Length: 227
Image (cartoon, rainbow, N blue to C red; front, top):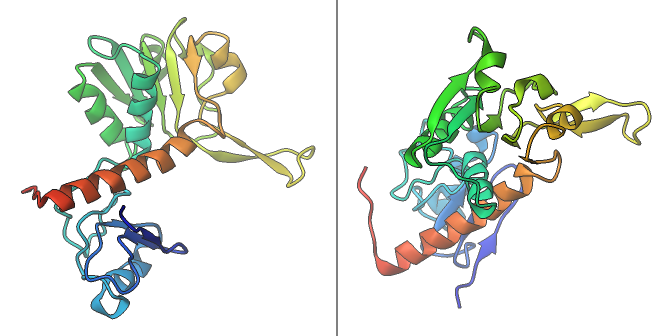
């Protein structure tokens, strides 16, 4: 049985008995990145270069790890599609947004599964028309409820990665969380749709744990991956 220590805060590290351990199987890099380096230095009981950044983020000052993982949110999107047995191969997919940690890797993961992928962003003409032809929509534009039902093809599958605070005087905190998709109008046309909160968010945690476990398995076997 592997012992796993967890340190959380501005940044955290996961590894076998991390505090005082001679090596860590995985590092979880959280924002802000400037706070990350001290947690993986010899003074903290772990090597300056831990075997894996399981969040899928690589700080510019730190070389990529031997066991790179896809960013968690796109990985979670694909896991959701596959668990729900949504056909990907040969289907049209639209990714809304082109960020380095969601949009671009999501498009790549879909392409690897033989989807025909189109990315739309703030400079894309006829973004609504392009999206309305897609069988799979992944929304990650960072604009609250931008994607309405008009953007959705009847029967399409919609994965909403966005999370935004929207003013709501009736809510206890004065706001409520919404995604990049206007849920009610999109749900009326979609065959499957993820809610916000409670959709992609929990999947990022599940993917983090899955990646960490896989890193430990590889390290235990002595495997190395060359970049």
